[in-house]
Length: 459
Image 1: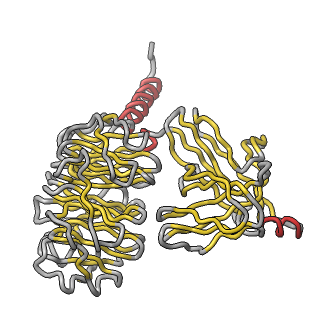
Image 2: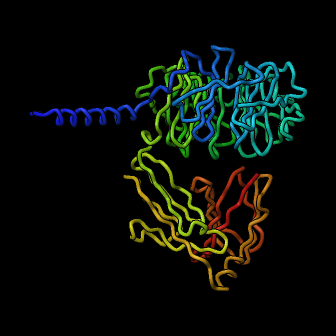
């Protein structure tokens, strides 16, 4: 029995804390910018940019993950799409207007020379090239000073554009999805089991995802074939965090896939409006723009295991695989020494976990793991690692060459620590095909002794 005011106050505090925790485990509406129809979202760190249809497609920004919104002054008030690339913002509008901002949207510069009166509603930026789509697709390699029509045989009104490795992908309103591997010289329709109305396209590694009027489809063979999924409602958008793919539905809220888009589950707890027009994600939240609000959900709620990595010394190298995960996930950490360093071991609370550069475990709780490196001191160690040369770096045209003076085994990891390829290399020159991205090569002798690691960038 509670007999004092202080005990009652303590109980009330506990109830409030528990209630707060329950609320954090659901979707929450961001601060109210009004009853607006949100059509596009994009993020840059803790900044969230939104476009609304109810007030002539006005642009808003929140600098604190949606806690407070403000209207930005743009030269064109009819923005259809916006993307964030490093510290730059790019926007496009149905009247052919394309603009860029270097100060977070406070001021804008038109970069639409030659694009006037062309309907534009989709943007993409990759490999220092800016793409806009609507009535055709246009490409600029000089920050919008000049534009080239790369539509060639492509038909249909463009709804979305995505660069994936050597391919440029495009979705249309009624003519299906298309791909080109030669920057638009020739487009190939992807019609195998794919509906004609494509709302959005995205990719992760070798997997491509199409959000259509008839649900979610995926391909893992460069679009040669497409597989349907359990989701059959019209999909508006995708957002990708680490290995996890979110999909927004025009009618049924938000879905999440943990296995490269093969299967999906609804994650709508607390989401008050299921008409989702757009999604965006950063390191803290997944955001959903609906027909009247912007909602957010903390990623730590969906992925409650945090694998935190410390590196000693901080110049010793890099580690792949840390981040947020679901309970029970199989996690592989990969240590990649910097030039002149070698990996020593993994430690946790003073206990050595492994001396192998690759460490795999099941994530049942959050962990803080230390990766130890040390300087290479002996001449023999330097000579041993110099037996292998990876070139050119950065590489281009989707490939890299490995020259080795002895047969070796190589395992190639992508920037998220996933195994991309594993093979045996012969003495001499070896060509390895790669997609655009950052990769880490780890080399082992024929009797499985660790030789060294190399980081390579493919443009």
